[in-house]
Image (spheres, rainbow over the protein chains, first blue to last red):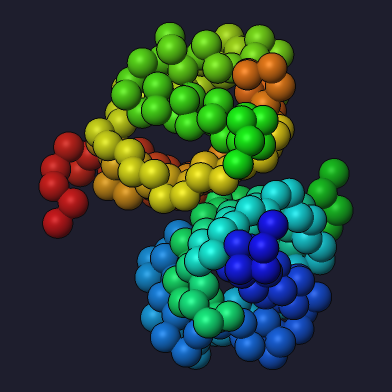
Length: 130
Length: 130
């Protein structure tokens, strides 16, 4: 496998490793200023808005486990599971476009339903998941 | 790229092509009898239950567009967008394990929120998305 072959995957994994380590500054170093992210709640335009979108999620993140990661020169897909304060298992997939080592586009897929349900039952959010 | 390299991807794409063509019989020919699928609403065990899970979704499917697909010998990830009667855009990701040409495990990720919202507003389900 040549170095060029998995350029996008290397960037996507470096980004993933950074934000799942709660290092948002390092994570943002892999995000293009003009990033466009299509997330479940709608489109996010630009790095400032993207960081605002990621910040509260990183704050509630307890653990992340990589499930699969593939990529080629300019596209990568990273699938992972997250444990967060309100939701014990919230798998997600990110399909990203990478140009010059920065993520310029992200299609972000996860299920909002358990987060919405947890918000409607705030008293359970800090208890065990039993 | 050798034939063996993308065995899982070939099966995942053949399955994808079949169900998005609403050919559930052909789609099920790529599903192992003992499939385990971790879907947003919980675990689905076995081909009979899996077909029951897919049937109503295929019935409301209007269109599907492949976004990305990658794989190796035994794992593949397929990312796509769907248009359905209640929800005009519902992207999803499937991360599958393939053994002997059949999908034995599927991690299925999509956002249930717009489907739940549509169910709460049944009068809008057949109107335009304006």
